[in-house]
Image (tube, rainbow, N blue to C red; front, side):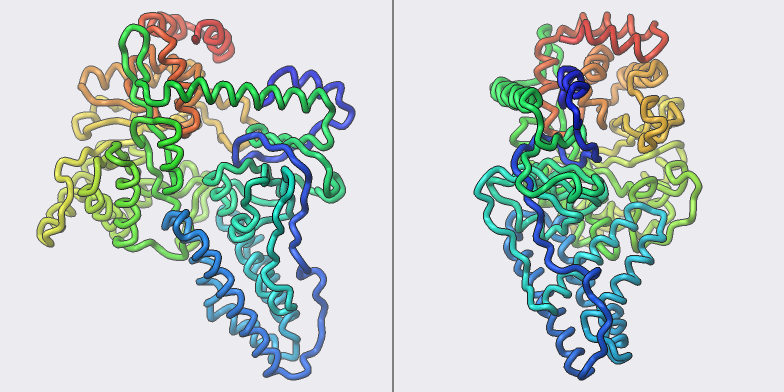
Length: 585
C-alpha cells in the first residue's frame, strides 16, 4: 500500500486520487480502456410487434445463442477453474433455461411488444425486485440477471458476443459492471487492473478477480466524466485509490514500491521452502486460508505448510440450491488431492451475517451478525449439515483432513455435533464407504463465550482455531463493515490480546493445538505477539505467508515473550502499536 510519502505528496497534488472500494489486491498501471458493452436497455424503446410468432422465434433463437456462448466460455476455462468457480456459469445457464423468464417475455410479446422491448420490461422488473432486497449478497445477484439480459439483447440485435480485442499496451479495463464471462474474455497478458463504477465485494466477478490475481477497485461513480479513454492511470488494489494522469512524483513512488515489492518477493522466495523457525529454535506452522480450488496455486507459490482454513461457502453461494453430497465430496476430494499431502482443515458451512444463500428463507433480523448464522443454521437444518459431514468424511480417505465447526458458543453445541459425526460414521461404515475414522475435530473460537468457557470445551475437541475477524468484532462491539466505527476495530486492543493469550495458555495446559486464523494472523505486529504466546500455528491469505515467515526467522522467542509481557500491562491499542513498531524485527 502507498505509504506516508504518497500521502504528503497528495496534499500538493491538485487533483488527488479517486477513491473506491478495493476488492482484489495489487498495483496496476496502464491506459484506460472502456469495455465495449454494446447497446443497453436504456436505448430500447417501445415498438409494436409486426408478427408475434416471428418475434417469439427471434427471442428463442437469441436465448439459444446466449446459451451456446456461455457453454463456449465454460469449455474455454473448464481446465482452469474449480467446480465451485464453474458453478457461476452453471447459474447463468440455469437462468437462461428458466421457464419463468421465457414465459414472461413471450407473454409480453403476445401483448404486442417486439422481442427487445418485451425482454427489457421483464429484466427491469427483475432488477426492481432485487433492488428492494436488503441483503447485499442477494441484491448483487441482480447484476447476474442484468448481464444475462444484456447478452440476450446483443444477440437479438445481431451484435454477437462482444469480444474484447487484444491489448497492445498495459491496460486498465473500465466498465460500469462486469460479468464473469467478460472478465475471462478480457483476461490477457497486458491487462493490469480493473475499475468498476458498480459492483460488490461478494460478487462473482470480484471472487474470480482475486483468484486470477488481477487488481480490482469498485464503486467509483461517474467514471466517464472523470476518466477519458487512453488516460494514464495508476490503481492501488490495496487501498482503493486510483490516480488519474498522476504527477511524476506519484509515478516514481509507485515505481519504487513496485521495485521494492519485486526485490522483497525475490528475497522472500529464497526462504519459501524453509521453516518458519525463530533464531532460538521455535517453529510456527504457517497455513493458508482458501475459498476456491484455484487458491491451491497460491499455496504452492508462497510455500505454506498446510491449509489452515478451507471455507466451504462458495459452492453454496454460487448455486440456486444446496449442492449434493456427491458434488461436495468430489470438490473436497479435489482440494485434498491438490494439497499433495498437506493437511487441510475444512470448515463447515458458515453463512449468515454478510453471506446469504439466495434460496434459503432467512428471518428478517435487525442484527444478522448476532442472529441465525453459521453453526446455528447447520444445527437447525440437520439434513444439509449431515450431508456436508458425510461429504467431508468421504473425502478424508484421500488426504490429511480436519473438520472445523464455526461460531461455537456452548458445550451442548459441540456435544450435539459429536453425536451427529458418530452417527454418520456408522452410516458410512454400513455402506462400506472408506473414510479416516481418526479425522480430528475442532472448533472455531470466534465468540467471546467460547474463550471464556474454553476449559470446558477443550476436553471434547482435538484442536482449536481462533477466528480473529469475528472475535475482534464481538469483543469490541464493532461492525467491521461500518465505516463510522471502523477506526475502533483493532486486533491490538488489550481485551483481544488478553483473551487470546489466556486461550493459548489453556491450550498448552490441555495439550491441544491452537491455530490463529483471519486477518490478524497476517498482521506482522499481531503475529509477533502470537509468537510471544508460543502459538504454533498461524493461517492467513497465502500471499502474506512469506512476510510473516521472514519476521519469525528474524525473531527470538525469548524476546517475543518479553514483548508480550510488556504489552499485557499496557492500557490502549495506540500504545501497543507504537511499542511493537519499535520491537518487531
